[in-house]
Image 1 (cartoon, rainbow, N blue to C red):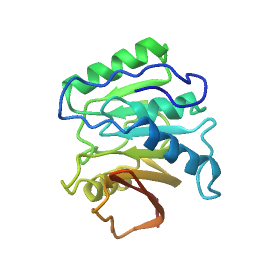
Image 2: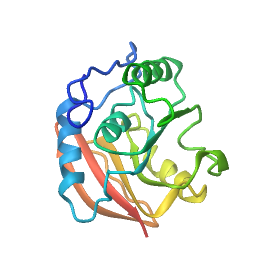
Image 3: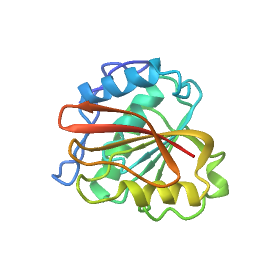
Length: 186
């Protein structure tokens, strides 16, 4: 795996050595970020505050930083995944522009004051077929984690759907075996 574009283009990304993590492929990340770069409803990446939920290797948040995001919070419970994220952050020297939050993405609680302003862009790539998108969206909203005009990018298996009261699906794209959902809070 590599960073697809931006400041760190071509730099390798480590993934945890476990079957529990399914990193978003380079091709899927490139397609996803092309949508973000060209859609009039997408927030600007330049200076964005990003949260990467079910972060795994941190590939989505690292790609966002490479393309101009100011800060990324990686939310991950798995020890091996947090280790891979730490190694990637260290290799890219992103200290001060990233943090790792060891907490369940479906049980975030309130946004801690020490993390700064709410996030304008959220990535979530939960395990497929576990029904985790909906509770994660509700945790983000109820805990004050999101700016009012935030965009959420959720990845599911191609045969999963996302319908959550209080959220609007702005667009969706099929990329390989994945379905990418772009959502905004109502």
